[in-house]
Every structure is written in C-alpha cells, then in structure tokens.
Amino acid sequence: INYPTTSDICNNLVNVSSNTEYLVESNFEGVEDKFTINFEENSKLNRMEDDSCSDSHIVSINIPNSVTKIGEQVFSNCPMLSSVTFENASQLKEIGAQAFVNATSLNKIIIPSEVEELKMGLFNGCSKLSSVDFENSNERPSKIKRIENFVFNSTIVKSLYLPKSVEMLSSYALKGLTNIKLYIPRHSKLDLSENEYVDLYGGKNIKVLYYE
Image (cartoon, rainbow, N blue to C red; front, side, top):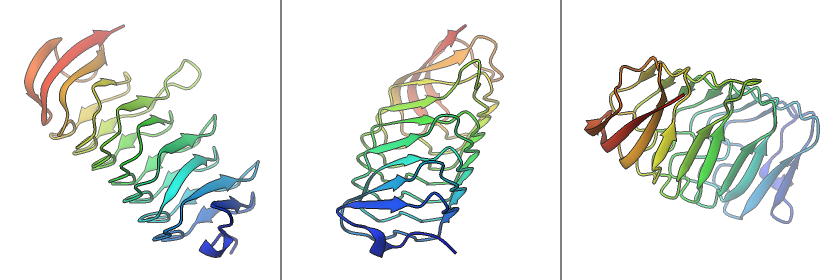
C-alpha cells in the first residue's frame, strides 16, 4: 500500500507520489501544524476516504482530475482550509456528506461537472463561504441533479445559479440562506415561478430569477 503519512509533512508541505491511489481514512486527521498537500504530476489518486484530512490545519489542496470520490467529512473541522481547487477535466462524481462542514476559512468553490449531488450538510458551518459555482460549459455540462438538506447552512452565499440538470431540492436545501437570488433556467425541472418567496426550501426571502 502506497499512501502518505503524517511523517511525510516537511516544511508545512506534503508531496504525494503520483503512484498513490487513495488517501486512507483519517490519513491526516488531527494534524495541528499548518500544511498543504501537493500531488505529483499525472497523479493516480482515485479517492479520498472518510475523514482523511478532518480536524487538521490543512491550508490548501488542488485535487487531481483522477479523483472520482471524496468521502464523508474529509475536510470537516479544518479551520485553516482556504483553498480547494480541482484540476481541469476532473472525473469527480461523488462528494460525501458534510465533507466541508465547519471549514471556516473557505470562501469559494467550483463544483466539477461530473458531480451529481450535493449531499447533506456539505458546506454547513462554512461561515466565510460566499461563492458556490458549478462547472457548466458546452464541453462539460453540469450533471448536478439533487441538492440535499442543510448544504449551505451558516454560509454567506447571496446568489446561486442552478444548472438545468437540477431535478430536486430537498425540503431544507436552502436552510440558513437569507436574502439571496436564486437563478434557475427558464425551462427548469424545478416547479418555481419568477417571484419573491418569504420561505423557500428553508431559506428566507429568496428571489427566484430566470436565465436563458
């Protein structure tokens, strides 16, 4: 088995070999020193197991495009995590529930196009998070279908553009959001009219707007 350990952290950096296929459960859990994870070119990393970086002082990570799964609570309770990016042509399909819960320094993120679901509590407690966007181009249209409960709770997101692929929002998908603009395609699968809603999917004072 080839995977990094806490002993590989040197000068606040851990270099992960291109042959590493996964980060194991609780891989860097609880590391108190600040650190950044760097992956060698042509990484073969396939998945990040549950809690692999939770309760640590990880600062940033650029996730290789070979990764298909991020487990549950991988970056939970990581107060220093300010940057999460994805390599171009990401193959990521699944992000586990509460993967970023209480990542209180994270301020923006772009969800790769192959991801089909934002699972329960994904960004719950990300108190500086103001921007959640979806990769969505002609070449790589977003496949997001479902947004579960409490995904944006305690964030400061003020506008959200939903791709046309979205089919369902759970009852409390917008819980914790207040005074936001929700942009949906004119021919969205969601049964919503252009209007202002006092309460919508748990969010307060939501203004729904169409885009072409």
